Image 1 (tube, rainbow, N blue to C red):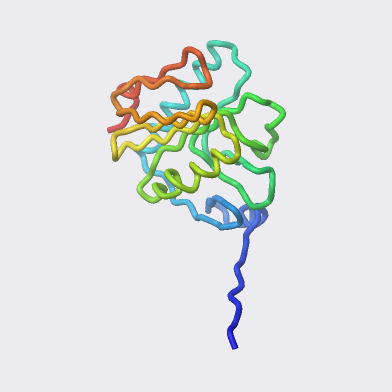
Image 2 (cartoon, rainbow, N blue to C red; image 1 turned 120 degrees about the horizontal axis):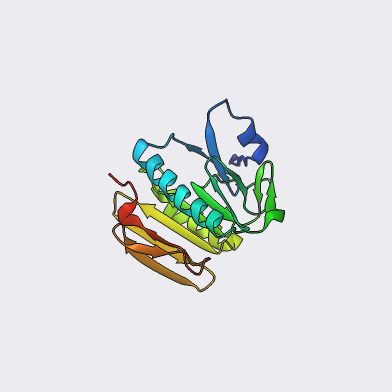
Length: 182
């Protein structure tokens, strides 16, 4: 007689019930624990946040940029919850006190050694399927920025010394040579 293996699926409630200070993401009911980011990672995220926020403020734009930890409920269900490093949302109706319900316009993930498979594979697939317009993977160890423009079905690989144009804006370009990557 065989014994059926029971698969346990987690929900957003399980993420919220984690011990204080413990972070996790939830993809298709599977829980992925998150390690604390390193100093270099945080410096890059902070520099990108400042550049994007300054751009939006300078243009008196309607979009909002948020920095992790910021909840994104990709499919507006109980089985998908992510905390991207940076999130730009232009539809204010998607925003609540808890985070973003549905796909943000632009997501940036700065790769950490432990997040590489999530950022390059699982999240890439989920973000595309959820209809995120643009997804950047910033990988300082591999010295590149990959830009996925899902609106135009394009992918471009840049070096960390390049100027990278944001697809959701006409005139925002980020000079990665000026971003603290050391």
